Length: 318
Image 1 (cartoon, rainbow, N blue to C red):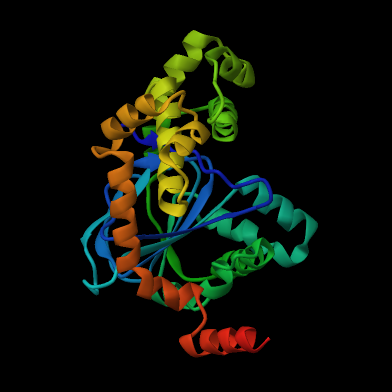
Image 2 (image 1 turned 135 degrees about the vertical axis):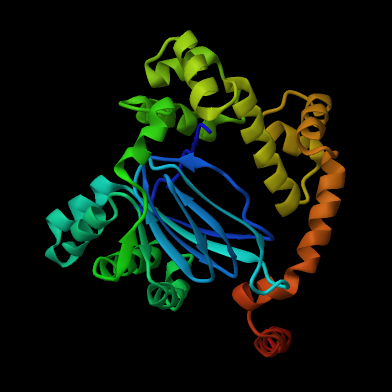
């Protein structure tokens, strides 16, 4: 099976990308990307596929995957059925890690970590338990705190016991994926689409960003992304619309315009084809699901009720 090419978006002000994923089950998503990936999987057990290494995994599974090695996790069962399965992911660039080691001797352990992870590295359970205790700063809303926590985790893991996973020949599975300068060129196009999806996008502009002909760019998208340029742009626009439907009370006509659709009719048609429901029905369903998980989110994002009442009383007295 050809692995899908994943574009990892770091953001303009971040050196690492931290992703907090919660879902009822972990689907099989065979993919690769040019970044290193450290993944801690919790409340989940199933199969882990790293290159040609297939293993069972359980709670607090901690694995470091090197660039362009196909991988995925797959699980239909949670350790605790009433709670979601969780994956905490740190993506980082290998050249960035080496530059950090060059500039700061304190980060020399990063070199050892990258060498050990050449074919993937599965850490022993105590390392996963230790990282679990570091999640608060790693999931901070402050980018500097996330960076500090990520560097501390990576440097500590440089000497943590672990075992290699894939054989060197497993990297050949990406021969049908991006190689050479293709990831950089595709990333430039994807970044342009992410920044300007709400505007009319011409194929000629995307080709200019990648320094590719229209025929070559079209072929790259179908081969590496798995869909045409037009379908990818439509998917990005629908994804943005979904976020606005869930996070705002803006009229659907406004959301359609801000998501890059010329008119509401076209938006409704494409949205229903992609999500098998209308935008209005999606918004209602999202509101219901959000209410069902409000108690869980409150533990992470809100003050305790007593502090909220105290603040309210102070405002009323003022």
